[in-house]
Structure formats: structure tokens, C-alpha cells
Length: 348
Image (cartoon, rainbow, N blue to C red; front, side):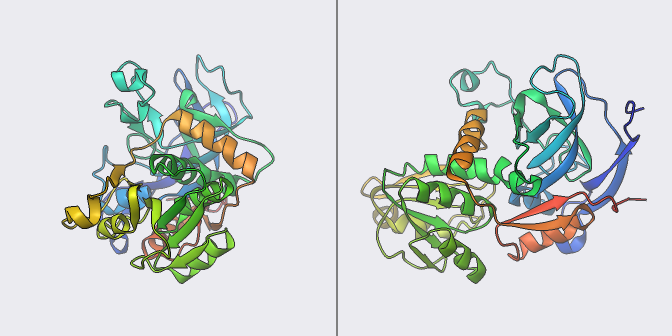
């Protein structure tokens, strides 16, 4: 039994057979509601953002860590039960679940503040079931208290797209008032761009989507263009959000001397050969971005509240999760896709 007042089963979507979205990698499932153990929260999902990482998992770009995992790691939920030793949350509180789910706390990375590099790190929707469901478990120590004043579907993308975009912005070493190029303009990029603009940056957005270019202009970009276009001025920093390795030399060539390119995705297609003189000479820097720390999350959520960040979303009922992922794969999502349980989704 799940406990007093709780259903005995949850409804969700699991990745049973990774492959192209046309092959139907998601399967509707009904499973027993888990009982929260020590340090765990059982939350009723109010909204779950749809991240490109979920698409990579569904299509097999990321090898599954366990069979039949329920994806989703941008989770806004309401605590309905708490396990032993939980002190930060009470039943009825709003809690946010993000990508980083657990670390060892003892390795040299954890001790130095780089817990995102912990070899024992675990991730929501990859190592454990996530938010493409009406109920899910979250670790209390890796969850975020969330305000009651904001709509769940606008909070959800902040919990991965926002946090990862924020870390990528910091990894790009953008100087005060600097010139930033953003390649690709989806859920993460449109949030990072607002932080950069609020901090006084000159932002140039390069993306193949006309709709994304319109959104970029509305959010304060100084210029917009196609992903392979040259920005109108040399860049101090750039962030590659599109999972397209061919854009790495394009972005590096657009950097000024000592500029930095941060590659934000967890998956990237092959990078073509680089020409040392054209792409790396003059102390240009190429950096990757790996997950996030909890400090990143806390800093970003404070920043988002302070600047009044705008979240562009497309809402999908939970029962249409495959459609949401297919739209993401087809570049038909402007901003961020968000799943919202609608009470009608009931797997057989």
C-alpha cells in the first residue's frame, strides 16, 4: 500500500525500447506507488519540463542506465509523503526536482565544490524514475524549495534548462558588458540569454529556427541570424546549446582573441577537424559543461527571481508526452515544452 489517502499505482511513460521517436520508444505504464525511504520525498507532479536530455535518452543517444526508466528531471511537485530523516520539507510543501540526484559527498570533487564531476553521481530520469508521471520520488537533499506564487509550468524549465544554461554562461567566462554568441535557442538558451542581457551583455543569437529568432529579439538580443552566420562583431564568449558538432568550429572562428566557447549539451554529434590557426590560436578556449552543482541551482533560482525571468512554454497534457518529445526532435517547440498531468491519462 502507498499510504493513507494515496493511490496504489502511478501512471507515467517509460523508455522501454530506445530509438527514433517514430519508432515509439515511450510506453505508457502503470506501476505501484513507491514508499519514500530515508531522506526521500514522494511528490505529486504538478508539471515536468521536457528536456533535450530526455529526447537523447528516448532515442538512444544516451545509453540507458536501467531498463524501463521514466524520464523527466524538471519536476515541480507537491510533497504528499516524506520518509524518515527529512527535515527540509513537510507534507504540502512545493519541491523542485532537478537532474543531479545524488553524489558521494566524499570524493575530491565533492569536497572541492565540484560535485557535478563526482564519479558516483546519479541523475533523475536516467538512474531513477523521473517526472513523466503523476507521482515520483525525489531526494530531499537534492530538491529545491519553490515559491507558491508562480505557476508550476513556468517554474519547471528553470530546474534544468535554467540551471544548466546558467552554468554554461558562467563556464563561458563572459566578461562584464561582454559580447556573447548563443548557438541554438531552445529551452535552456532563452533563459541564459535573459541572465546575460540583465548583466549588461551584448547578446547575438544564431539559430536555424525563424520562430526562435523572433523570441530572441523579444528577449533583448542585439542581433539574430542563422546558426552558420557570422555574428556582426567578434565574440568574447559563446555557448553552443544545439547538439551539433559541426557548429563547434563555426563558433570558435567567431571568437575574439582569448574568447571562450562553452559546449552545454550532454550529447554532441561528431566535431569535425579543427584548424589550429583559425579556431584555437590566440588563446581561444574550448570548454564542456557537465551537469550542475546544487550551488548553481540555488544561485540561478535567486537570479531568476531577481530579474523576473520570462519563461516561454508550450503546454502538453501528460498523455501526449510522446508528441512533446517528437515536437522537440522536430524543432517545433518555441521555448520549453512542459508536461502537465490532466487527470485523463490512464494506461491500461
